[in-house]
Length: 147
Image (cartoon, rainbow, N blue to C red):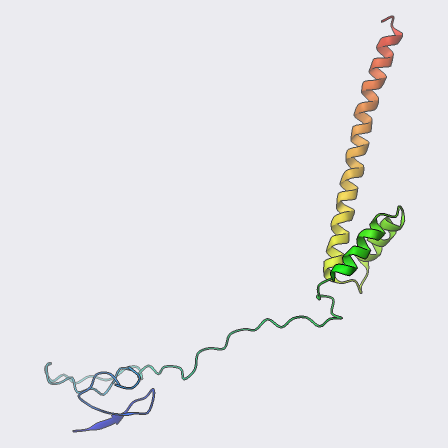
Protein backbone atom coordinates (compact mmCIF):
# COMPACT_ATOMS: atom_id res chain seq x y z
CA UNK A 1 0.00 0.00 0.00
CA UNK A 2 1.38 3.42 -0.97
CA UNK A 3 1.27 6.36 1.43
CA UNK A 4 1.35 10.07 0.64
CA UNK A 5 1.58 13.09 2.90
CA UNK A 6 -1.49 15.33 3.25
CA UNK A 7 -0.76 18.77 1.78
CA UNK A 8 -2.82 20.46 4.48
CA UNK A 9 -1.83 18.91 7.80
CA UNK A 10 1.12 16.63 6.95
CA UNK A 11 -0.51 13.35 8.07
CA UNK A 12 0.45 10.17 6.19
CA UNK A 13 -2.58 8.80 4.31
CA UNK A 14 -2.92 5.91 1.91
CA UNK A 15 -3.62 6.26 -1.79
CA UNK A 16 -6.96 4.48 -1.27
CA UNK A 17 -8.38 7.26 0.93
CA UNK A 18 -10.06 10.15 -0.90
CA UNK A 19 -9.93 12.48 2.10
CA UNK A 20 -7.47 12.97 4.95
CA UNK A 21 -8.86 11.35 8.13
CA UNK A 22 -7.20 14.03 10.27
CA UNK A 23 -8.23 17.31 8.62
CA UNK A 24 -10.70 16.27 5.89
CA UNK A 25 -8.70 17.74 3.01
CA UNK A 26 -9.15 15.97 -0.34
CA UNK A 27 -6.37 13.59 -1.35
CA UNK A 28 -5.34 14.54 -4.91
CA UNK A 29 -3.34 11.32 -5.20
CA UNK A 30 -6.21 9.02 -4.26
CA UNK A 31 -6.26 5.77 -6.20
CA UNK A 32 -9.36 6.37 -8.30
CA UNK A 33 -8.54 3.76 -10.92
CA UNK A 34 -10.46 0.98 -9.13
CA UNK A 35 -13.88 2.09 -10.38
CA UNK A 36 -12.94 4.08 -13.49
CA UNK A 37 -11.24 3.18 -16.76
CA UNK A 38 -7.56 3.88 -17.15
CA UNK A 39 -7.36 7.43 -18.52
CA UNK A 40 -4.21 9.45 -18.55
CA UNK A 41 -4.70 13.03 -17.43
CA UNK A 42 -2.66 15.91 -16.20
CA UNK A 43 -3.51 17.64 -13.01
CA UNK A 44 -4.05 21.34 -13.82
CA UNK A 45 -4.05 22.85 -10.34
CA UNK A 46 -2.30 21.93 -7.09
CA UNK A 47 -4.53 20.63 -4.29
CA UNK A 48 -6.26 23.20 -2.12
CA UNK A 49 -4.51 23.85 1.14
CA UNK A 50 -6.51 25.09 4.07
CA UNK A 51 -5.20 28.04 6.06
CA UNK A 52 -3.52 27.06 9.29
CA UNK A 53 -5.23 29.78 11.34
CA UNK A 54 -8.37 31.89 10.88
CA UNK A 55 -7.91 35.35 9.37
CA UNK A 56 -7.17 38.10 11.84
CA UNK A 57 -10.11 40.30 12.84
CA UNK A 58 -9.69 44.08 12.64
CA UNK A 59 -9.60 45.61 16.10
CA UNK A 60 -11.00 49.07 16.76
CA UNK A 61 -8.41 51.01 18.67
CA UNK A 62 -9.87 53.90 20.69
CA UNK A 63 -8.41 57.31 19.88
CA UNK A 64 -5.87 58.90 22.19
CA UNK A 65 -7.42 61.14 24.88
CA UNK A 66 -5.89 64.31 23.40
CA UNK A 67 -6.79 63.38 19.83
CA UNK A 68 -9.20 65.44 17.75
CA UNK A 69 -11.30 62.29 17.34
CA UNK A 70 -11.62 61.53 21.06
CA UNK A 71 -15.17 61.96 22.37
CA UNK A 72 -16.08 65.11 24.26
CA UNK A 73 -16.78 64.36 27.92
CA UNK A 74 -20.12 64.98 29.63
CA UNK A 75 -18.57 67.72 31.77
CA UNK A 76 -17.28 69.50 28.67
CA UNK A 77 -20.73 69.38 27.09
CA UNK A 78 -22.25 70.83 30.25
CA UNK A 79 -19.72 73.69 30.02
CA UNK A 80 -20.62 74.20 26.35
CA UNK A 81 -24.32 74.42 27.19
CA UNK A 82 -23.65 76.92 29.97
CA UNK A 83 -21.65 79.07 27.53
CA UNK A 84 -24.51 78.86 25.02
CA UNK A 85 -26.77 80.56 27.60
CA UNK A 86 -24.63 83.74 27.64
CA UNK A 87 -25.63 86.15 24.84
CA UNK A 88 -22.94 87.21 22.36
CA UNK A 89 -20.39 84.91 24.03
CA UNK A 90 -22.28 81.96 22.57
CA UNK A 91 -22.01 83.32 19.03
CA UNK A 92 -18.29 84.07 19.39
CA UNK A 93 -17.57 80.61 20.84
CA UNK A 94 -19.59 78.89 18.09
CA UNK A 95 -17.39 80.54 15.46
CA UNK A 96 -14.21 79.65 17.39
CA UNK A 97 -15.28 75.99 17.75
CA UNK A 98 -16.66 75.66 14.21
CA UNK A 99 -13.57 77.00 12.45
CA UNK A 100 -10.78 76.36 14.99
CA UNK A 101 -8.06 73.89 14.07
CA UNK A 102 -7.58 72.35 17.53
CA UNK A 103 -11.25 71.73 18.30
CA UNK A 104 -12.43 68.13 18.75
CA UNK A 105 -14.51 66.84 15.85
CA UNK A 106 -17.65 66.31 17.97
CA UNK A 107 -17.60 69.88 19.25
CA UNK A 108 -16.76 71.23 15.78
CA UNK A 109 -19.78 69.45 14.26
CA UNK A 110 -22.01 70.67 17.10
CA UNK A 111 -20.88 74.27 16.55
CA UNK A 112 -21.39 74.08 12.79
CA UNK A 113 -24.87 72.61 13.21
CA UNK A 114 -25.76 75.34 15.73
CA UNK A 115 -24.55 78.06 13.35
CA UNK A 116 -26.58 76.59 10.48
CA UNK A 117 -29.71 76.43 12.66
CA UNK A 118 -29.10 80.01 13.83
CA UNK A 119 -28.82 81.18 10.22
CA UNK A 120 -32.05 79.37 9.31
CA UNK A 121 -33.76 80.99 12.31
CA UNK A 122 -32.58 84.46 11.26
CA UNK A 123 -33.83 83.97 7.69
CA UNK A 124 -37.22 82.71 8.93
CA UNK A 125 -37.48 85.64 11.37
CA UNK A 126 -36.82 88.13 8.56
CA UNK A 127 -39.42 86.47 6.31
CA UNK A 128 -41.95 86.35 9.15
CA UNK A 129 -41.39 90.03 10.01
CA UNK A 130 -41.81 91.04 6.35
CA UNK A 131 -45.08 89.12 6.05
CA UNK A 132 -46.37 90.39 9.39
CA UNK A 133 -45.30 93.96 8.52
CA UNK A 134 -47.18 93.85 5.21
CA UNK A 135 -50.30 92.50 6.96
CA UNK A 136 -50.20 95.21 9.65
CA UNK A 137 -49.53 97.87 7.00
CA UNK A 138 -52.55 96.61 5.04
CA UNK A 139 -54.73 96.80 8.17
CA UNK A 140 -53.65 100.39 8.92
CA UNK A 141 -54.15 101.50 5.32
CA UNK A 142 -57.64 99.98 5.34
CA UNK A 143 -58.45 101.79 8.62
CA UNK A 144 -57.29 105.08 7.16
CA UNK A 145 -59.84 104.79 4.32
CA UNK A 146 -62.79 105.21 6.66
CA UNK A 147 -63.39 101.83 8.21
